[in-house]
Image (tube, rainbow, N blue to C red; front, side, top):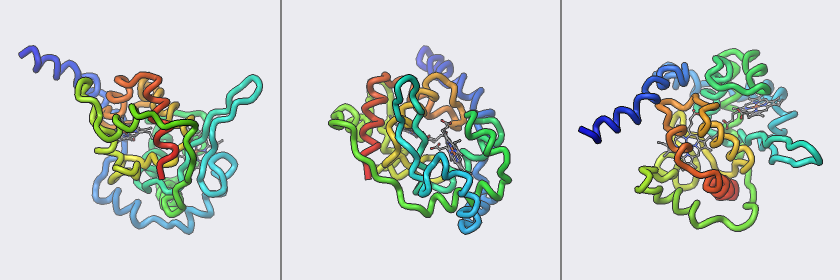
Length: 223
Ligand code: HEC
Ligand code: HEC
């Protein structure tokens, strides 16, 4: 009974959130819409993304200047089209907030979002190097998880090579560590809450800041 109550109380906040976390549902129609999108039109629209995401969707590492830190811009090349589409629509619907992206995403139609997603999915995944040694603890978390904290291995969802999985699970291989850290910190604080069923929030809340940095470094060098 005690265990049951614990399970219910753990699931409650996320169950309540689940309905609101995203308006994108993977119906056969939505899947077909993304699958049959026009990458050629996406390429034309992508002119508007170059100034931040780079000419090949490779993103930008975080840069530290004298006083201020310019945040890392995510790589979006080689990403699953379904994931990119969902994020663009989440920004459009205010399910995910970011001052740079929200304004732009609101100018994109549903078709534009699908076309852009198809274009970026067709570009090669960026390759990056690790910043220093890859921590063993991160490799273990990815491959085995941590039974004590009921943390599943990252690879069961994100794939053995960080390649992502069907629909909404993003590829992580080659992602800039600076962006990776900011994404996990945003799930951890709840500032980012567009993950359906709160899966990533639940995981991020259990990771220490140090572990998050190590995982970011691990995924950045993955090819
Ligand atoms: C002014 C700079 C800027 C421009 C222009 C821009 N982006 Fe972004 N983009 C960002 C930043 C910064 C983030 C990270 C925001 C966050 O953490 O939510 C981001 C995030 C994203 C994400 C989420 C990536 C992920 O891994 O979850 C997608 C998808 C995306 N942008 C697509 C686009 C597309 C497509 C365009 C062009 C139509 C574009 N962006 C133009 C700055 C920009
Ligand atoms: C139960 C499946 C599952 C597991 C296990 C999982 N993830 Fe995720 N992850 C997801 C989903 C689904 C999303 C996208 C949610 C959304 O739409 O925002 C995501 C998103 C992310 C993102 C944001 C990527 C981006 O481009 O913005 C990062 C970083 C991430 N996960 C890292 C991890 C790490 C590190 C682990 C292991 C400690 C892990 N994930 C385990 C399902 C999972």
